[in-house]
Length: 311
Image (tube, rainbow, N blue to C red; front, side, top):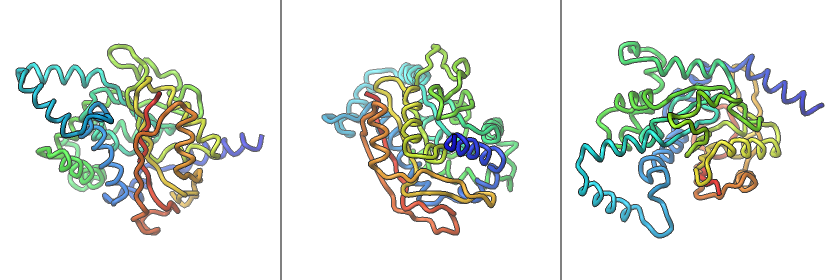
């Protein structure tokens, strides 16, 4: 009963006190090195390694690129583009715990045209939905949406060597097909939103799932964290990839004059949870904390990127 009371208290804390605009103005006021770390790793997975399709123990990236060039030389350019579009339409990406933040979808949209965002809080889902409906006309100078997100899109555009961040903005808005509720402590985290979350083929499992700074804050114990990882993994197809990004050694963060708790994670805890969920760790990267406490009022020692594959 004590655990259930703590769980209800945490849900009430988020529903009553989490304010998207204030959260963004604190934690995403600028493009800091920790966020660059997350964006750079997502770019490498989706854009460089093509969602893991060019990565293997025996084939180097350069070899993969050479084969790609050979294939493209044998195909008419228009046919190749149509083929790539069909492939992109079949690939399916889910983000668990999007929050009010649209940046994890930037690189994913280079690989998939079927992205589903999800979050526990209605106010976060509405923020994402509002952002998705905005156009170049409505993004007037001085608006929060411009001041916050254009530098993030510009950073990824430079990584991709794209003409402009506007191309990526349009690409994301075209690729995100739904924004749905989720609860990672349920065995079905999408809570039966399958009609909305399915792609045109009617499939409900995903090729790639991304979750950034979510699971450690949605749970209260290491055991709950492990349960959440297992629940999320159920939505992943066999052979699919789970990308977990988060904070290490973090016990809390401050927002809206409230302290929000976190499960204290280390690499062993994350990899153990993944193994228990039937996933094999493929890659792990860490970045020591770069941001001063006054800029990010949380006590993490580092941030991490973990790529795992469902066996």
